[in-house]
Length: 459
Image 1 (cartoon, rainbow, N blue to C red):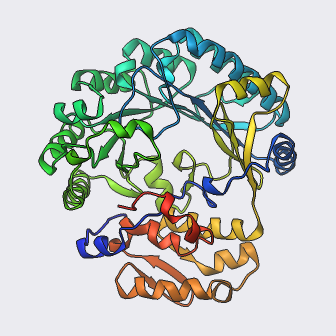
Image 2 (cartoon, rainbow, N blue to C red):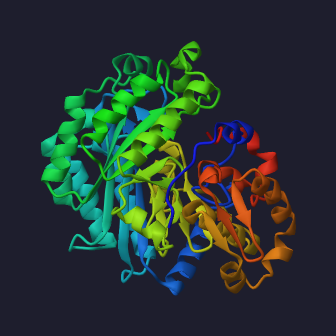
């Protein structure tokens, strides 16, 4: 498989409009409050009947300080005692959810996100993992993919060793940018020594994979300054990079109002940074997975993509398409059976519902046949950059050219522009179209027209 990209400035300018990141289809905007505890339980029963492994996500929302760019669901506090009542409730949810899932179903994937998961003490983290092992069927031989997001400012070698002892074998380090002026502008002061000490410790203690998170488009960034950050990280050769486009949406995310908009790089500078990123990483031997992600050719994501086994869910790209995703903690989103569900966002309501013996679900969506069909199409395109009509026709008993006649007509302009090729039996995304894969997927999105203003630009 060709995993390269071509940077075509004219095409990017033409197609750079707002659109979803497609960690799900339909997107989380379609979840509604008419879906609750009883609906979720119905889908758990259906999921158990179908069987298969599980993926678990735990949301740990606490952070010591606020990063101005952050769009995550977080709680800013320096009082570590605030984590204790939340942990008590999370353990209660784990017990309740675990009792509903078939105990024979192995947990092939587990992820702690946030917030800052290492805001918790080791004793608290151990209680959380022990409870998870008590109520769910985790692997004991390190074959599961158990990952955690860490802030190097809240992590040291001792913490890394503790995480490894708890069963984690993959680690993602938040960095964003090493430039001191940029760090000051976004309120995230983080040294190279802190960051690389954690990366080195992860390798020393046997973590199978390391990922570095960077963001382009932050205030005061230039092509040269970001290249310096990238070059420093490349010397360490992490297995994966996640390099996100900063979406400045201050009306939606309060912390972003602290950013001086006059300091944000121009659209032209952002594109120049993106072009530099692609050139530097591909020259260094990384391949483009898609949607801001790069990996070494021998990384599991790159291998899964070449073998047609890559998947995408609320945690991003994954090799576990066969897993139902169970989300736990406030704001967490999951997919179980043929439904998406999301937990409440408020700590007090989370506490109240659990005390009533109710699962803290407040939104969800029952997937229609059309939703599942379009999800399969979008997932295949965004993961593998091609789509065989015959595979979709066999799976969903449709005639692709008839069902998607309007969409195929809309794709003809993209074909003329060199983003893809259309034949009677498939769509093939070309190197120039891979950076714009969101645009291609948007053609198949039935919900998009009325919601487009709520998404960030694709580039």
